[in-house]
Amino acid sequence: MRKVSTLGLCVTLVLATSASGQDDPTKHDEAQVSKNFQTPSYSPYAGRNFPTRVYFGDTHLHTAISGDAFGFGNKVNAEEALRFARGEEITSAGGLRVKLSRPLDFLVVADHAEAYGAMIEVYAGNPALMNDPTVKRWYGMLHAGGEQSFAAVMEMIQGVADKSIPSILLEKKFIRSIWEKHTGVVDRYNEPGQFTAFQGYEWSSHPGGNNLHRVVIMRDAADKAKQVIPFSAFDSENPEDLWKWMQAYEDKTGGSILAIPHNGNLSSGTMFSTETFRGNPLTKAYAQDRMQWEPLYEVTQIKGDGEAHPVLSPTDEFADYETWDLGNMDLSVLKTDSMLPGEYARSALKRGLKFEDRLGANPFKFGMIGSTDSHTSLATAAEENFFGKHSGKEPTADRWNHPIFDFNGLQIMGWQQAASGYAAVWATDNTREALFDAMQRKETYATTGSRMTVRFFGGWDFVPEDAASRLPADVGYRKGVPMGGDLAPIPAGSSPTFLVAALKDPYNGNLDRIQIVKGWLDKDGQTQERVYDVVWSDPDRRKPGADGKLPLVGNTVNVKKATWTNSIGAPELITVWKDPDFDAGHRAFYYARVIEIPTPRWTAYDAFRFGVTMGTEVPMTTQERAYTSPIWYTPGN
Image (tube, rainbow, N blue to C red; front, side, top):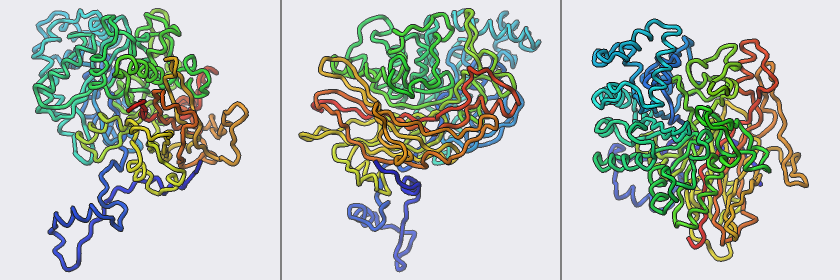
């Protein structure tokens, strides 16, 4: 175990070039450049071709184009959402001035495909829609305001749910007009090397209220994206039909596309089901298709964290984090313990090992990201700058005490919203192509809102001295594979070794610890898991107890003032860890979980800024965290 200074993990972004004083510096001998890159150079950065920077973004943001977002008062359009994400100050739907602490690097405006753009066009009085009597009535109700406006919104939302929405709002010509306008806006805000705006949308299947939503992201510009219109749950609620549409998109346009499932904790166990949508057993073809089209999973967002659950991981003291486990999307189905394995990332990864052993392919071999699912047009995931799930939950003195969901006599309260999360992507450049390719190879991690820098590599011959490298990624790529990869074939008698490093977010709390989570398939065909503390702050004082547990890092949060000090924890952590329990015959995965010291939760900031006292059930502190994509081991690989 080794802790090193902040400087070592900082990423060098500039590649130096030089020219002889006798040469014209504007001319280059390409053959000589190639020769130089094949031989050692004094500069440790010369010839480097791996990702040197992590990019942070949100792949799941809703604007006024989404009917539910508009219905809850959001009239902020996609253009303003993009301006905000790249660092500009705008006015929220509730009239508040708002800005990010730092710009994001990329954004996907992922509005619902179902009734795409319908409500904002109804409100605008689109002449092409006014011949329909229901639409015309809604137009009047929306402009009457108050209860009438709310009633129109509820009618629209119910119409989407039961597929009774006026057919004119589903006509391809109408949807195409909104989609083409949107793709043009996105292209205008895409600035390669500076800010990436992805073409995308959300496919919002929720049969019986069970959330099977996917965000669909294109690698391409508007010229390809507008050759289709978004495939919606009105077309099919079956994910396999979405994949067929995605294949057709690539065949037609020559483009590239992927989908990201999210929010499995509201799916009644169906997100990672052991059966297909039609109730059939999973097949090798199904597993291959799912991993072709869905390489990532959105493990954390506003509607709760989905890494682990205390029922599934009772010995993991960090498993109960921002847990939503009351029921499904509309609370029509209450949660039972039997549903949980089909909802949480760690259990899904374990299920994947069993399927791979049985089918020869793993349907749940996904990488991890976070995103917001905000319906405010504001990609805010920082605790001190949290603008809520929808525009009715923007900062006010009482938002904590009003329900965010209120169905069937059951409620999820405002304070239960999680200020989460962001997607972190290791890419060679801030472009659609580089970021998309990194997502496909799963070189990604999720954060709950903090922008900590995390590296994770696996191999067979990392040694403790590698943790002293001031260029950990250089040794990581040379000797192993990055997060999202597969371990190379095992050398005889070896155990896997991992190089893991984390650097704190300069705006956030210090680091408490890094853990490696291992899941494996034992000799009896049963899945197992274990969480290892591999490096932590203040190692001279903090020693694992007889139970193997590490003492808590402490807590410096002043709840009344919503402040904390970084007098505990570490600015960075790095180590090399060797699996002490490795069995070469067991399929396994490993991922890193990085945990910060306690800091104020968004509820503490609200209590302080508005001068309110919240109930004792409301948490006031949080420990932000990151989850890397796994690295997999396969016997006989």
